Image (tube, rainbow, N blue to C red; front, side, top):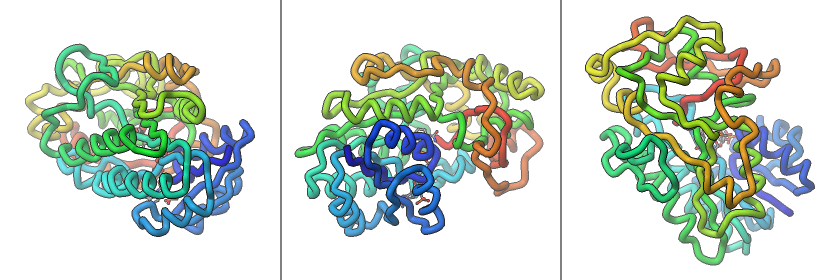
Length: 349
Ligand SMILES: NC(=O)c1ccc[n+]([C@@H]2O[C@H](COP(=O)([O-])OP(=O)(O)OC[C@H]3O[C@@H](n4cnc5c(N)ncnc54)[C@H](OP(=O)(O)O)[C@@H]3O)[C@@H](O)[C@H]2O)c1
């Protein structure tokens, strides 16, 4: 099958393209950067330069590539930055989730593409009421923290227009938080510095996914999954911060995380920091397992976090801000540091 991967030079692209090639598909992959052309070629793809926000360029690239399936992996997350300004930090990604998705859908319909698979996110967008684990049938958060409203609206847009698309089979894959080779290493960097505290009882529930499992689910979605389907691509063990954070610290050989009360986190970190650490909900993968014929190889982050990342496969990051030393400042600032020794979650969502 001929497959176009929009945004193929990123974390998931690096694991997805070789799998697609290994399964015998012809892959065209896009980047905005001429410098990444060789990377795409080395992964086995035919590289194309494309800006996903340029509707005309997207139309041309898709028409010329003439794929049977288009996969949207475009995102512009450089790191979480300041959680108080969540929507501002996500502005470019939100554009890719709204305009970028619309552009790809229109181009795909115009080019007679059969299926469009679009990456979304699951975790903090879940409704923060009721049980700790949500399915695709549960609503998105009707009352997100103010600083996340636009980012949630962008996700809601994507998750509305893709399944509703006419003349093309739209599938949404809501990945959990990535960790593993090629993904960035920001949470590990924070954990090593004790910069991610356990807030209150650490009841915020997180859903992780190893990048290889995310790639495998994406390949499965080429042939499986109902048109209009929405799938949570997460591991089998949604877990509260109070469980996975000390575990990750131990796996990294770091000191146990500091503890701070919720009232203090609210003052120093703001509502998003408190929400992420105390009230977000995890996600169930039951539907994806059933409909995609997929199952995560890393059923639990407990297995994945301890697995060493092969040398050279952790994605280097540059330090953008000075690393904070008190937990409050740390919650506000979220440092970006390069290179980890272990597979680790990234905190770009
Ligand atoms: N990372 C996570 O934890 C996570 C979790 C859940 C969902 N997701 C979603 O999964 C998808 C893939 O994530 P990822 O971690 O692989 O992202 P990534 O590593 O940041 O890669 C995304 C790619 O998008 C491309 N891109 C950025 N702006 C673009 C634009 N204007 N036009 C065209 N391409 C553009 C970039 O390519 P160039 O710079 O080469 O152009 C980049 O390589 C995204 O939709 C993301 O939102 C990620």
